[in-house]
Length: 191
Image (cartoon, rainbow, N blue to C red; front, side):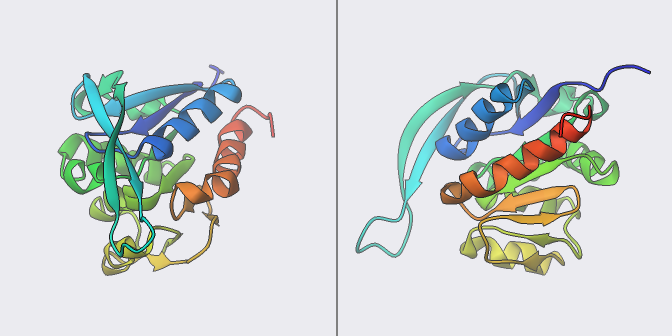
């Protein structure tokens, strides 16, 4: 029997949130898994930093680091990957319409592979029709996106619903990323 792939997709686009993307990227490396960054094209993407500043009622955004996508959505063979992570930021609002990303997303839900999701990342599986009846955490302003597509909003730092692990924002990374990595490591009996 062939070994299970060590590769895990991290989905990005321009305006992916820096902490939402880099925290799971480095945690995957710590777990001796191989993060593979995927975007609309195999090019460098501009990430952003988000914060609601004191006295503000909306999110302020700054340019952050850039990240190189290793593979374009159209070139992903989802069967070659152990799991997937949907990063937050504004990118999901735009990239969710990509037909190849929808195809890839549906594969991970259909095959019951480990899925991690934070913040606006929920917009991708919601658009792909994968959240019906699924319990998920997300940032409050994306609650509507989840619920209108049949998902169940849970206001908690970590929600585990079968193969799906989610958090609200980057403030929750320490609560849910470890649980997602535990699911990824179960594939080869490490947890």
